[in-house]
Image 1 (tube, helix red, strand yellow):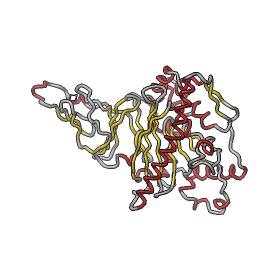
Image 2: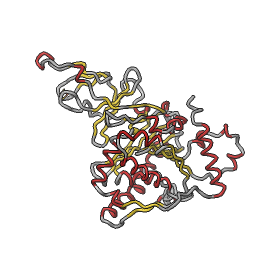
Image 3: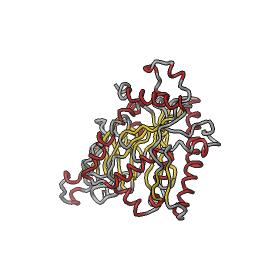
Image 4: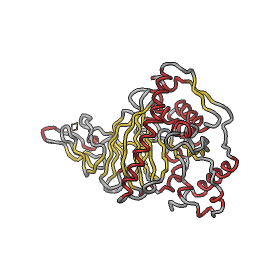
Length: 395
Ligand code: FES
């Protein structure tokens, strides 16, 4: 079933990339766009973005493959909020605030693990995978408490297409389907729920939007990445938008072979090529080498406006074996180097320049319609009240 979902749209996007490849052109935004440079350096603006974007919208916090077995969990801090994502014995993923209902201690500080129960490391209260309080240490001396009132606090969570989305606002009424705008049906084609979580790394970067601009940007590829993977690549991108989410493709220069192949024989590599971004903070990039894999980059705002943290997660369609392991790890090390030494080194320096007041505005060309659309969505979400968010994403 997963392999038919979205097939029509995926083929249509390949046809579009073929058409633009033939004419060596790309669709252009109507005009050049500027935004205030202060959007990247103003601490007040940063607080607003964290509160109104990261704390209100569904965030893709983990691929299913990171917690595949019953009892698996992942603990992380997201925009200052401690969360605990668990997979119960029933296979259902639930997310809790990682705070014991006694006095608020983190229930675990291990980033990932497997547990039937969580025993609070402070005084030893015990919670099950559904978040219910099961045991109070020295209960008789502690005194009477109504256990039903001491469950862990649950956050809205959905698992689909092998990815797990969580909303940090436990009272949120944002509808996952409306927010995802059908994009999850396209991502389903990857089949991530059966993939293998190989490894992950964390990289420090500049303001989260400086970093995210880079994932949407093919304009820089042959220039900034001239020493690594870029010299033979185009600086052109085609963006396909599904609500606020955007898939990025190159125009296909090598189209003749594809045109000679029946469309239903087009491979997943063709249908899923390029970068898949998930608003507001995820990029999924396909690559080969050592078996079929993707790098999922998860950007989170850091402690201040000039900082972000990116977790690079490497998923492989099948677990690498023998010499494939070395090849895969070399590929990951290469991708880390490219992002850290080229993209983020550039981003950190431009962040400094913007902080120093070097520019009043930053500019996105007609060929950078992906970033234009992204910043448009950032502004729209910030300006929208809670009650109107679903209407915003419904278009
Ligand atoms: Fe958890 Fe006291 S804070 S048992």
